[in-house]
Image (cartoon, rainbow, N blue to C red; front, side):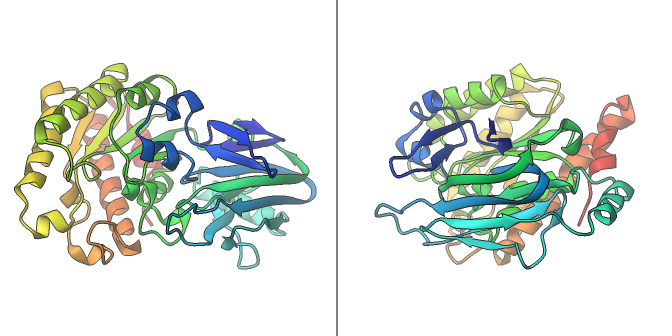
Length: 360
């Protein structure tokens, strides 16, 4: 979405607030109102959202504030980051705490821009360092108050040529990460040299048919990951889960049989520690759904193969820690590359995965 000479990346709707400023949503308003009540609220969480622009002359000012908790026990401040293309801004600008009062980010271009651009070119990095990226806090709603400065929106050649879409629970949303660039979804997209559309819905990834249609028909992406199960394992019977997963995956995969889609079941969590047979049944549902569809670019990924032990979990034994996010991303990139390698050996069509995957 373009707004005041910026691109509001991963934002599909915005609404003026009575006290000034704008509330941002990652999905269109008509779709949001069709989701379950928790997802309707989680749509406002700004995970994977960025304000992108080029500085034309002088500094720019971006004014942000954190939405009130309204009774929800949410941290009173969130973490924003300022990047210049693929490079994190220095300590004077990144990271920045965003609280309930308007916070102004005053952004000047880096003095060593030419050197940064040489580094980006030599290493085949996906973003132009001249592009300012204000990466919003992932964990709660961040409101846009004001944009000032002589700025221009991004140009196509400054951005990654391809985009990864990530759908899932609070884990995909980023729960457990300290900073927005430390979520497994953003780490994975960065390592693949891709942009990111994050459709993680904390506590509310219910795989609705309307969401499947939105992903299949209204979002531009080249590769997708679909994380399914953790939000409903305590409340849905296996057959209800099976019906929802089958419809969700079928809609997306049948619409895009030419694109890689990786279906991820539940990551290692407390259900495994308890020996809960339900988690094995849920994992079988995801695996069998992929096998039954038998599409060449639809792949099943066992969540335990990405997060292999409890040392990668936070104390709730559900959400990954920062190190767990790193492990998930590294193993997911390896999985994606191995699939592409086997395909490229036959057709050569997926060599871009191998060229663009940058392992930290």
